[in-house]
Amino acid sequence: MKEKNPWHTPVTIIITVIGVIAIVALVTVAVLQNMPLLQKYKYGIVLDAGSSHTSLYIYEWPAEKDNNTGRVEQKHSCTVDGPGISSYASAPPKAGESLRACMREAEEWVPKKRHHETPLYLGATAGMRLLDMENKVVSDKVFEAVKGALEKSPFSYQGARLLKGQEEGAFGWVTVNYLDDRLKQGLETTGALDLGGASTQISFVSDNYDGSESPSNSVTFRLYGNDYTLYTHSFLCYGKDQAQRIRLAEHTQSGPKIVADPCSHPGYSETKKYSVLYDSPCVSDRKPQGAPETFDHTGTGNFQECQEVVKKVFNFTKCKYSQCSFNGVFQPILQGPFGAFSAYYFVMDFLNLTDTSITLEDVKEKLKLYCATPWSQIVQQHPKTKPKYLAEYCFSGTYILTLLIDGYNFTSVSYSDIRFIKKIKGSDAGWTLGYMLNLTNMIPAEAPDTPPLPYAGYVSIVTIIAVLIFILFLVSVRPLWPHCSKQQQIV
Ligand SMILES: Nc1ccn([C@@H]2O[C@H](COP(=O)(O)OP(=O)(O)OP(=O)(O)O)[C@@H](O)[C@H]2O)c(=O)n1
Ligand SMILES: [Ca+2]
Image 1 (tube, rainbow, N blue to C red):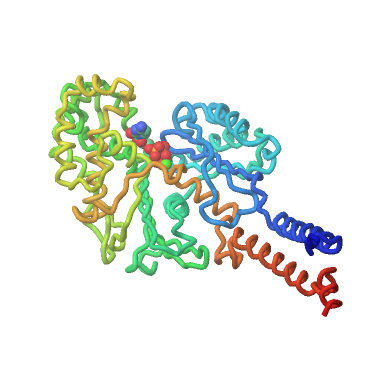
Image 2: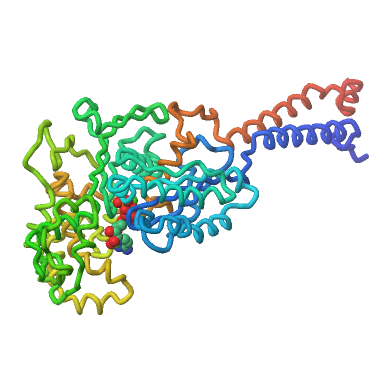
């Protein structure tokens, strides 16, 4: 007679079915209870009102991971048409109107149901700092105009304000190190070099700097359980547009009709107004008396001579500290690596010089050839580049090298510690992300408690334990199985 399979008895089948249902229920409850709500995102918007232009950045992060590093990402950016808000001094309402198109774009990029809870910030930098120095009443009017425009948006408007140079430098450093995941892991940090149109910032941590010498240059942070003493300085008027003005002011002290400029290409010639050149607090006190209305700005394209005139923009004579960069400003010993962004990147990228493994000698040689190239050839080779930018890359490249080497004391060796960067993991390098992380308290002072197990490990362990419990249960009820009781009867 065929022996009946002991597993096919009603009792074992019922026990097995209940056991399997119990395991599935247990694992499902455990998984669902702990599953991250992956689909939900939060958003934040920051407007960078720079001296030359305004950009809007939209950031996105998973809703339940506010405190985790490396999770906030740039979702979209929008460049505002027209100049920076400080250029609307004569018509402040237009500064507000200029933001409208990018604000509309933001409304489309951020899901509608998140609009009201999305914080919106505007930070203005050196252009507004200069306007504020020049005419506080007008700069207040420009701020009122942009505030009016932002308050009308559906987002949660959190204010429009002038950033201090220190904040601009420090938040740029936070951005770079957050995106590189260096803060949470407590790794050696990267210094930040930011070159704008009206100011330039240098920020880095140096083992030799404890903040006691020149305290106004130090910013302290406690991030993810690590203490940082950051050195930072912002040089107002040393952004590349204002530095260009200072340099041309040197050339035009006698009020000449023709300026032969070694930093412009041979064959370049443009008529410029004295009143426009001197319309900035960086140079206004030097305006030559009795100068004609205009001058002809012509080029000679001589890199060595350009270097000499650019050097005159910096003052290296006085230093009351143990060491200085320039203009009597304290700077500790450089400690790399460094990320150089904004105009550092635009210019070096245009000149094909972002590779810092090229020796400084070769960089200078390439720049020498570039500056000597006739203007007509430059225009022909770059039909799509704005002539205003194009006319200045010889000066800008020379200025960048002089600022780094003579200004900040980079050497032919430490030059290779610099990386010219635009984006890190898809997010633009700049102060805006660090500013938002700070204002939304997204970087905790102490390291967040991390679960002892990764999520996949947790699920596996719950499943294995549930299966083991079930097997133990089956073994413990074995005497009740029909074939077992039969065997006992036979014996
Ligand atoms: N493709 C580009 C884009 C910009 N620029 C130059 O880069 C500078 C602007 O740099 P940016 O970092 O955008 O300056 P802002 O933020 O506007 O100025 P600041 O930070 O000083 O307020 C300007 O001189 C502009 O002419 C350039 O040479 N090439
Ligand atoms: Ca800037």
